[in-house]
Image 1 (cartoon, rainbow, N blue to C red):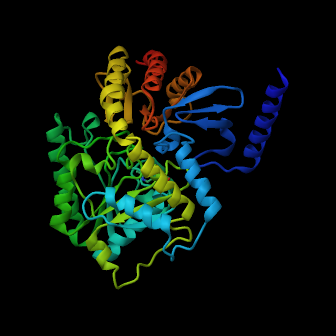
Image 2: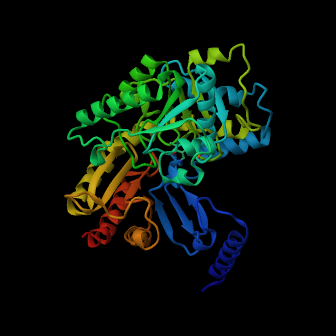
Amino acid sequence: MNAEADALAAVKDAVKEADRNHVFHSWSAQELIDPLAVAGAEGSYFWDYDGNRYLDFSSALVYTNIGYQHPKVAAAIAEQAAKLCTLAPGFAVDVRSEAARLIAERTPGDLDKIFFTNAGAEAVENAVRMARLHTGRPKVMSAYRSYHGATTTAINLTGDARRFGNDGATAGVVHFWGPFLYRSPFHAATEQEECERALRHLEDTIVFEGPQSIAAIILETVGGAPGVLVPPAGYLKGVRELCDRYGIVFILDEVMVGFGRTGAWFAADHWDVTPDLLCFAKGITSGYVPLGGVAISAAIAETFARRPYPGGLTYSGHVLACAAAVATVNTMAEEGIVEQSARTGAELLGPGLREIAERHPSVGEVRGMGTFWALELVKDAGTREPLVPYNASGADAAPMGAFGAALKKGGLWPLLAGNRIHVAPPCNISADDVAKGLAILDEALSVTDAHMS
Ligand code: PMP
């Protein structure tokens, strides 16, 4: 080893040691993890201290929509930091006003007021609070196949197993089944049938819960963590109609899908629906500085026109975060990144993943749009038995562990969840890097093929 490599190895050891001793990691048994020490990142790549480069097909946690270290956004944050780092949320500030204006201009319909938070879960918490105060009703409905964040209300709304450790801490949460034809809860044979049955099930649930007790229905426009669940045509419009019929606030959670991920500014644009409240985070700043928020309809804004809104955060609309948001939105617009995401999905990722699926019997389904895809991995294509059981851990999860190791060895950093690989590179990934990533994926899928029964 040369001197430079020695020095890097020493830094890596120090980083890992301090991490092991003092960082308490999310969602983890602290002694059973071995986080990769990352030395730097740029565009669609990051690298470790040993010189391994990884093509990031996870966009961090599906948020680096413009890739790492975009120079325009990094410069805007630095310029803002030199000028004014912070100011209390009660003041009108140029970058906060501008960020709110840019977001309001892009959100659908009359969602023209922006309540800023620091992250997605806080956006969900505040949207739910607004809905309860607006309607005077207590309950909130959400899908079993959903993730809405890790704070108390948000984790209880979350339908997946991550809520189990907190179950029951929030009163008034009602779960229902959303449409998902591949594993249809309604035993439907077509998308249309799935859509109709899902809407009937939702209406039955509303009626039996008592519509007068339901403040809101919250949905991910396209389910992200639950597996890139693209709703069938007509579903979101149908939910909108049910909400209107029963006086229920319709909340769309676009924390993961907003700002270009699905090839539109907001996923709701694909189905031409306008919720009453829209939650966002992640892509608004590509995560360069934490920022989230709720876009609010005119009717709900009116509720708080002369009555104080009982909620707020010390860092709401943080000045550095708003500067990052302004630069991110402007960069996405100037560089056509939303359109690029749509094109990459339609021309490269969609066709490429479907072609790969044909060669690999362990791929049960390919679904997605824009730069937001998932492959459902199965043991048996006929029965659709998942490659690993729902919520698998330890030895049960071994086939997915081996698959992940093969991908990383090939130089691709994957987002694996249950029996799925999510394919969510930066929205501005180059065509060359898409091809590179698909080739690595193609090769690694021989590992999951080998685990079929
Ligand atoms: N809603 C959705 C749809 C999400 O995907 C996430 C995070 N993955 C959240 C809410 C929570 O966001 P945060 O982790 O920023 O609180």
